[in-house]
Length: 204
Image (cartoon, rainbow, N blue to C red; front, side, top):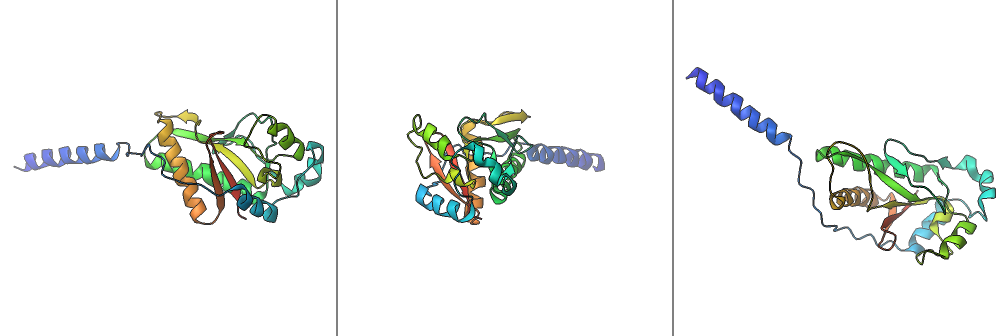
């Protein structure tokens, strides 16, 4: 009888351990409605950011007030054609929080390791003028000009290691991460369909 109890205990322990190692179910629908429009984001950008630069030659005047962002363990930077990789200190911290929070959710759901991808950062007035020729979403008074604002694509992610997840699952976890930070009053967010990105402005 004692031997039988031992067998039952071992089998039960194996079942529990196996259940604990399974991947959690992540929704594929995207319920988050990010509708913080440009005037709202621009007001915060003007309050907490730098004055717009005419062109990139003026960057040297404000570089000490900004943080240079580059590929790291939490995010990757796309090749930037119409912006430069600089943010205010608080916006840089926000970006790191998003990348770190996203990866924390991946671990929670026992999914592979991914990095979010940043597609646009600080723009000068000259960058905006050039962008408006090809991007109908671009506006003259862009929050990007104040170094408080960045775009993160919700379609593409950099796979680092482990099992691969669907793009829709990754999009959900990114949305959940950003929604939590928005609820905490740390950012404003606009869901952009044409550019398939989240347009995010720091509120500090």
